[in-house]
Length: 297
Image 1 (cartoon, one colour):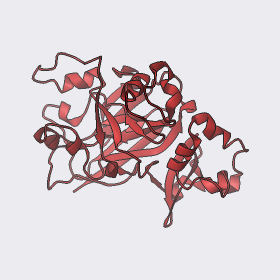
Image 2 (cartoon, rainbow, N blue to C red; image 1 turned 180 degrees about the vertical axis):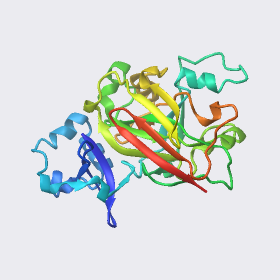
Image 3 (cartoon, rainbow, N blue to C red; image 1 turned 120 degrees about the vertical axis):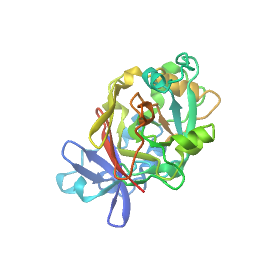
C-alpha cells in the first residue's frame, strides 16, 4: 500500500495512493466513515502491518472515489510526529570518508551506531519551500535518507525479529546547518531548524519492498547528481539499527527512524557546495518516489 496525507481545500485528509495512475482515495471513502482521522492514528491503531491489512480486506474503492493527485497538496505523511525523529549519523563508509579530510577518522565504528534526533517541528511537506534561515546560518546542506516507520510497540527487540516491527518506508531530507553543527559541537541544533525535515511523498508499506532492503538512493541539486548509492551499503542494516535503538528504549507505532545518508553531501566537496536561495533539491529512492524542495531566504 501507498499511504499519503494531503490537503484538499482547507481540509487535511489521508488516504490510499495509486502512484502508477496518479490517483488518491480519501480514507473515509476507502475504509468507511469510521476510518481513523489521520494516517498516524491508522498506524497506531493497526499495531502491525497484518492488522492494517485486515482492516482493508474489502475490495478496492470504485473508480469514482479516486481523486487526481495533482488536485491535492501532498503533506508529510506524518505531519505531527509523536516524538522526535530518530536519526543515524555516519552509516555509509563513503560518507565518512568524504568528511574525513583531516585524516582523524580511522574508519567506521561497526559496533555502535551514532544516534541523534531532529525536533518534530522540522517536518514539512515533500514539495514545500524551505527557509535557509540565512540570518543564523550560511552553511545549509542536504542529506538524502531512507526513513523507516515503526508499526508495533517494542523494547529490546531481537535483530532477527526487528522487521516485524516495521510498518513501512518514506523519504526524508535531513537538512543540516553545518556551521551550527560545528559551533555547538553536537547535531541537534543544526538539524532542528524549522522546515529542516521534508518528508514523503507517502509511506510505502513494507510488503511493497523486497527484503533485504536494497534500494537505489540519490539526490540532485538543480538537476546535478550529487548523491548516488544503494541502501545495501549501509554499515548498520535496518534490523540492526532497530534492535540496538530499542535496547532499553520502547519504540512506538508511528516512530520515524532515518537511516543515514550516503556520500555526496555539499560539505564533502572542495570547496563545499552549500545551498543557496533558489536551489531545488530532489531526493529519489527506488520503489518509493521522490521529494523535491526549493530553498528560499
